Length: 580
Image 1 (cartoon, rainbow, N blue to C red):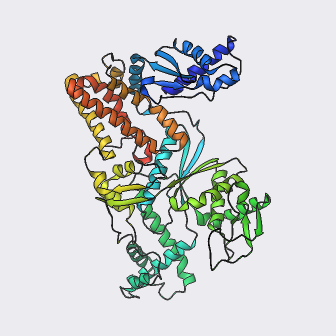
Image 2 (image 1 turned 45 degrees about the vertical axis):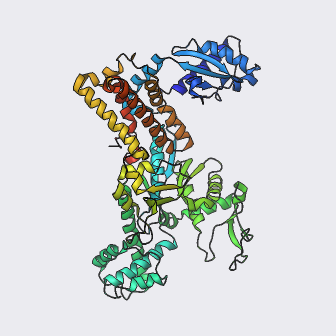
Image 3 (image 1 turned 60 degrees about the vertical axis):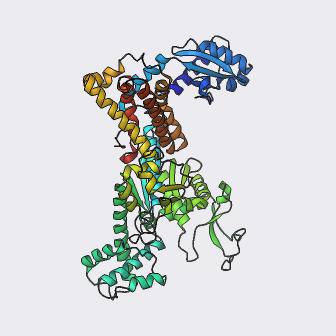
């Protein structure tokens, strides 16, 4: 039961009843009625703006209408008081019995508690990570991976039909640069170049990807093909090295993501899209709508570029859809820009049945958002929507000191190194302890210390205390007495302490948290919620330990509360245990 949605529906029903009786005009729009916790808990449990949003259409003064509604709401079972505050807010205080019944809701629903029909089965495509297949993932990729995966799980919980997607950028110059880096590693492995050749080439800037991760790839290629490529011209060896390198990097990326419990439903290839004519088809579509033209762009504002020169370009009319300027679709050599390929890719997603698309990108793509949203509006003819979640940088620290770079990865700490050191659950949780668009400090020392300052430990410790209470209750009362069905029917009149009721209210707010986080596309709200629940539980634990036997008074709350720790699991499913 979503308490807030249920009372919103009841208020709408009372408005309809008043309209039927002639007290209010018929046809009032009740969709703007809101109900939420009051800012000050002393004012009650729920607050509604119903009278304020309906007063104008109903031709009533807000307080007058609020008083009429409050009198009717008092008759609803579970409402203890209904008071009017300020210009016309209605504050409701609910009975202890009403809140006790929510424990039964949680127990009987099990892991399905908080499931919502908000999405109504509508399809949503969530694309995340999508790192260039040029090396192992770094921690920034890991943050995007967790934000995307948690968001996908959250949307599923809220009733959307979610597809998790990874887009492989395997058609650009970067994969050619990777192939050339692999070529030198391969020549060294084949004995055709001295062992120090790679380091000299990297110092000279002749190779772009210099991590040791290419060494086993070169050895595997040598074992497969022998030395057949030593004398071959570049046009012969480049495609083979590129294909082998990309496949190896994708296996490396897949293994890194598997360590985080992340898998994708769809892996889309940019190269395949280009080779199958997807970019040409997308641009023909835009040309047919008069959105492509040949023109000359003005120089970038506020910048002096010595190598900039005005030249005719194939441009997309992005400025018609909210972007600052029109955008190039072809490079000077006649090949498509990355932007052109991305337009085709999003058109492909739309045609596959996804009018709602969510992309999770790194912060360095911030300047790319408006043009991509403009393109999606154009190619979907205003029928599609793109929400871009930008993930800010992760600063790796150890005891407050920056972490040194990794030899294996080349010039960064790889994601796998971090996950292997702290564990999957710690990494997943910490990545959601800040909103995605805020920088995040990841301090190895802090995320593994056993103090309340470590949010992972704080939440896990609440779960451990729940399990401890249940073990003691099991020893005293037996397994049958602690079954969900028996506990759901138990008399809960002893749970009257304010701390006990506050915790029950926190647990009962879970369905509202799920829907709110899903609507806003903000999975970090789940991490915040778990910390709030843990704080309420630890406060209750401390109070009960001081006053009476903890096991006898909160074991039932623990039994329902234990379901809250199933969020940061593989696939971000709320139905799997995560914080073990």
